[in-house]
Image: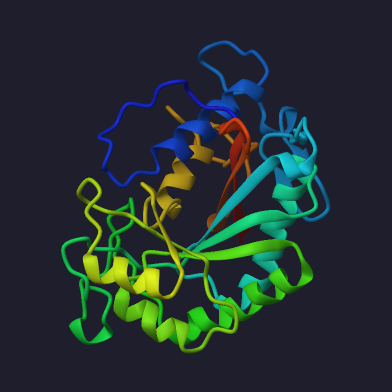
Length: 294
């Protein structure tokens, strides 16, 4: 995705994946050849097949127009539920390589990772304490997503530290960590996160204990408006399927030429390139990667 409707109307403080889903649909539509209103063009006419992947739609990079040091490049990687954590090292590297190829860059300034099942409650600074057993957040499909354990997150973090050591990433960040979870996490890190990105339910309400602890640890607090589970299976099937709002990539009753199987979202990456001296977003987009299983 590198384009979207100019105006997306939704409540400002609603956690939403509207930007992603509407942008995917508009990007698919823009690349499809003209067809009668009652028909959907064959997916092979506007996608690209390689030995290992199908690009939907066919993809052409959009390199940055100015020298690399003119930009701040931020990437947020969403690890999705029910995907083995031992695949994350390869997934993270693939996500970064896609963004670097898209922007014509050799590194990114900040990589923020979002772990499955973790949500931030601005009214409860201890909501992330394991002893409190908070209710698991729900995905956009209404399914409960259990929070990930600290041990799994630490294992993933080790691979991120290696990427920073290679110079691919300058700074690392996390999302939705309250004081309790952040304290446990920092005990096991070699490189501390530079950023903690949180979703606050009420305008500018960040718990004071978190503000003080983040300041003590020299961690910058940022806010966002992303879903906990940004691309559920049902949503992806709808976008790729037939019917209203679908792209016709997956086979159905009226589309016998489409792909057959169960499509499983693996991860989503969101990137922005901001011109430093002007504060202008020159390039913004998403890559969403899924697996087709028999």
